Image 1: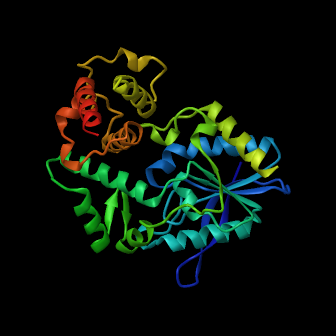
Image 2: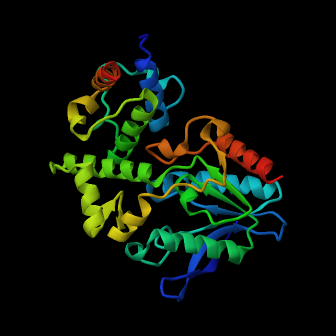
Image 3: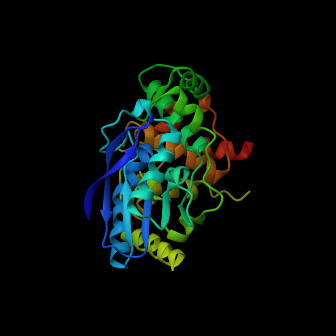
Length: 223
Length: 87
């Protein structure tokens, strides 16, 4: 496993370097993985890397880039917009010479157009947003501040909002909310992987069985 | 309607809290949840409520969520049962 820098386009045409975790042995099958989003990114990070280790063992190169403004990225999240993330993943795909892409949960919203698109437990942006708004509402209530999901959404669309520790701009919320996973992808549902999704866990967990099963499903799809 | 709410609710808590198999079967009416289990923070509760909606086929409004319903296993179970009867 090698952390590498790759050139990521910035809005306005400049280039910034972003990190990616890579298993690159110059093999024919090269899989770009678009990570899960926000709090789910943390909860699925280890699982995602465990799947990459298994794919490496099975002869597939894999690349896990950061979305600009998240993880190790030095870019500000507040200036990111969903179309920037889509551009970034397309650039990463091009840079690493990916032959297929796997989206993880909300990452399925940013999978570039490719011949083989795999979608692990894809989620609509509206559903992910709803859950983050609910968490914000509950946290506010705990400190005695009454907020509603509708009110928070209106605030988000007006001036931006912090959800689950992520400061998102109004433009981000506006573009993000209607996004749905691409329809030309092959869905790998949680039932195929077995057990309950690790993104549900209150604390990041891991499951060797689930990592085996998702890697096997990817292998079948790419064979 | 045969009531499997209790079983489903224990399964959802098992998935969200990452409990071992059968650990949730030891929950009683008085087992403390929100405010008692450190891993059950607001993000986890939001996930829990969303799973409840999906798996029990109910819709939970913001103003139905209060401390009492989330405080104990018994409170959450009573809430879930009542919502399913309404549905």
